[in-house]
Image (cartoon, rainbow, N blue to C red):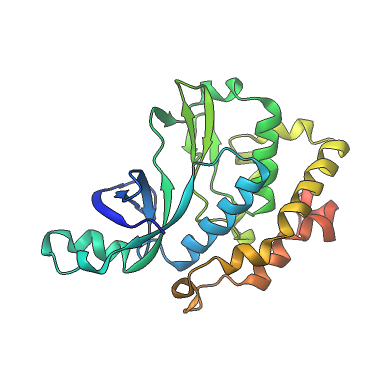
Length: 239
């Protein structure tokens, strides 16, 4: 597990307010720890692992260790209290990106947009609202490479807040190609990804699971199998 060697600025955007850090692997990360809450970082790990399996363009991510020797330096107390001790979640900082703009959407392959939309529906992630260029899409655009970057899954696995998912998601228009063949192909990919769900859950640090934070393996497993158990209500986003 890479260790954090340098603690940078707090990102004062979004409710988790992550911290920019450098690790001993030479990479910079956007890091979420104690301040984000255990539910958020558990959701990040599981959602990112599943998304990576599906080929969703997610930045490299890993568990990072906050060394105990950092504690005791008064100048860093606020940042360290936000990180907490031990393992934290780190998403690799991606250079040369901007937050997705309305004008960027048509530059993204329609099939990829449809897959990201289906992925967010699967993991019950409502946090990609973007209507008429307004909202918080949690999507980045790499202008140099002309590539999409998908970030932030701390609100995944919360079906009760899905709201008008198919009316507010940044890629809602891509549902137009959710044909029966598309749904069948995506369902097969979901099943393959779920074959190692227990293994993904077992990767979570014990420290993150010590306190009941509203997310459990049975609840995540039940949610993720809804597409197979009740496909009609899954694809139409009904209870």
